[in-house]
Image 1: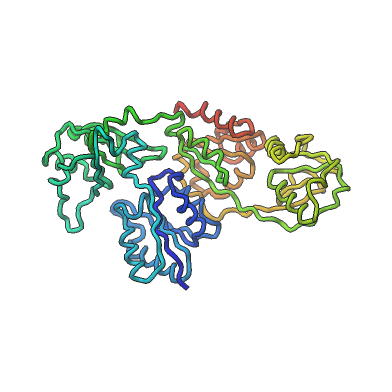
Image 2: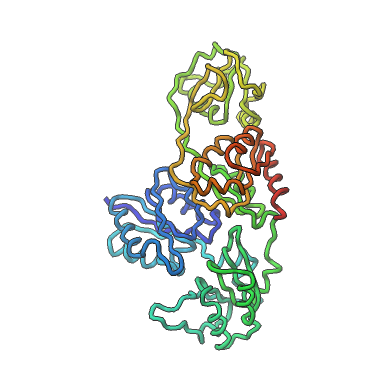
Length: 464
């Protein structure tokens, strides 16, 4: 049985620049072979059983040789797997996508190409540089910074005399030579140049100058690979068109969710948000108790309520079974959620002890000293480690104690040590207490809603 290989472009860095069909293919994949430069948050779009294989390459060092990658693609597909080869940028723009496609075609493998947004265009836009403009450039040319395979130089005479914008990819090691060759073959020393590193990400940096001084400016400002080299008059537009946002340069970790409200809010304010995975929720078989025995129903969290409604329906009942019951919530966030479902809470519980006529509905374990507990779901921890260096983040957000537990379960020993330098924004006192007990030295307690938390993050980090 033959599977399918998808050569998928991940885009320039920001996970929201992945295409919709690309996200769907990641969700369907049995195996994902991914590059070094992709944002690890994209791996959150995979299903829980997918095998994730790091085949990333660094300059002058290939963790997995291209020939081995080719073999893996063929072998996985021949075993019936749906395989995604996740590549930075676009598979066919100075990558090995064309070569991989040739191998797959020769081996009779079912394959497809899903384009990605190339940094050669998006990286410029992220720095306020339009790659074409009616007054400055009516064409553009994307050029590899590497020498040709046979060691021959690029056709500098042709390149230097092209009208329009020149964009060099993978060329930082050759920057002095690129500037020298362009000048030697006709470009004026005053020709504008910009270097954009880590385009579309929190660590994006740019310096601009001209062919005579750009090497000095790059060395002075410490820019290196991966970076784009942009040559042409469109560089002049950057100061005018580069949009400033209040959280630009801020890097935060948020829990992954389908609605992505936290993620969207941070991205809209200019921050780079990445995901930490949540545990897998599994329903627990349960029998609906005799509700007439209880005067009150306490919902520990919104999942408990959702599972309870499923149980009611399966028992040929509906929400009318709660008529006359006092409705309790474990915290304010649960109360707000229940209100969105048309159920107003009579009281938010503040004690740890409950009377016997209260039915607590929750997950695997009771949150109270109480025997009347209905367990409706359990959490299965992620098997993957958190794929980030926590030193790269300004903050992590915890809307619940469960989200903090999920985050902690994925940490390796080195990441756990890094918690002392990472700011945690938490939505409630119980989460605050749990965070301070689990390695965080700086914990900021926010009101238990997204809007207030975002404002607190802006207040703390916007000036950094």
